[in-house]
Length: 604
Figure 1 (cartoon, one colour):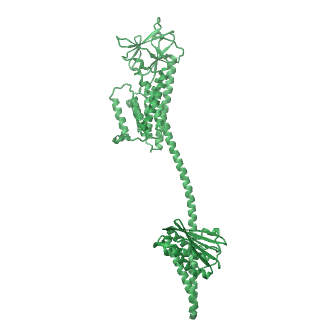
Figure 2: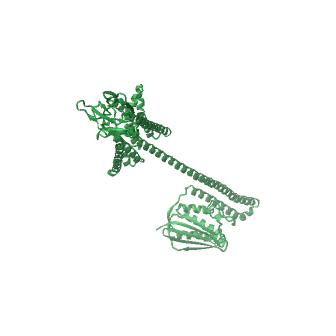
Figure 3: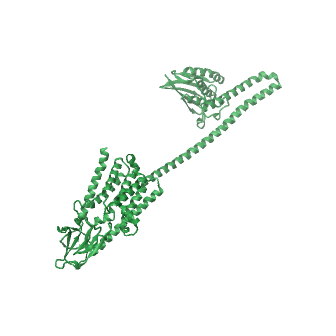
């Protein structure tokens, strides 16, 4: 925890020190004029800070002597907020009432006011405090004109920038209302804009505008803290988090306005409030919130610039004109405002990137979906075509024996003595029809997973012995030799009757497609935890175009002779083996034969 908070705290201290020292150096490099020294003007645009005030212990007033070489040079004083009148030779030169806290004015020192013998004039400050920190500067008439013009330009630029940024934040929120921090960012930059234009609007007669302007500085300082919390979605402990709600923040601003209303209406400095913003940003950095370091850097630079003016009364350091211009034009807020703007742009850019990535993924998904839909459509069409073919084959195979049976019955009716001749044909067709119906019923149950298996230990060697013996009648009738080799016996777990049915279908299928005098070889062996049963025939073989279809229902290899198969044997065998966690593979070479390999898990 110390490491997490220590790193951003250390960065804050280092950046603050560097910024503060850098602007102290800049401020100290600005021109100064010491009381009683001869003013030697080499540049009419040079603006001097006043140092070396003398105090009259009797009156308690401060005095400043301006001495020139040539009284024909027209000098001017540039001044901002002046708490007390400034007199020259007993006459009021600057009235304390004629000021605005964030605006510069100038007054010309008439050459006739100079003592012709000493070429000097004395400024009298009615303030009982040392006026070294008052915004009073000496220059020529031309310097005053150019200096105030430069201030007005910077002032207008900063007002325009903060106003546009406020509109920018409001427009972003209008289009993206889920980003609540944009409201407070817009209000924050709006408060800075209102604070800036206060030097113009304070001359208005509208009580409401004067009231709003008088609180704009305090509101901007408070909203600065709110932004640092809201933009990173930081939560306050317990019930304090309710203060971050819309009502809570508006309540804080209202209470702050009341506090300012009933306190002395002096020129307030709320620089200390910005340390709360720093604390919120250090917390965000410690919690690794995205963009927190950038805001911490911007806020620290703004604070370092601001403290140059804030701490000037402590070390009796004069504040140069251009530093005062930065303060009056609200330039101290600009680094933080710009960093906020960059962070918001970064957050939105990332959201756009995420949207683009999601759109690309969606497009890719749509393309994949279209491909899958096309494949599925093709598959469904193939299934529909196979189903139609399947049904046509069923209708054909059912109609054929029925047609034969009908012919036999007609012949028996016409000649009852032919019953013994027709009876074997009738029995054979009834037997085929019965097998076809049983295979169709079994296939339907297998596809719907409604076939109940009676599981038990099944010795595969003994099972294959029984299957081969039952297939001898078919093989001998076709003059096909069956050879069985058992390299090692093994036991599987399953339904012995259904496994017999599966192997019988495969072996009988091999016999059907093997020509007379051919061979069918059955081998059994086990490797590790798997049993391998290989059925190899020397039959006609299967072409490549038929190889991936032989397990389809009712599919018969093209170009082969007719036999009594229902066309469902291999499909049934495959489904039975799947339900036993097994598999069946086939390899074939046209004209040389086919190899079926069955795999089944074995148990010890």
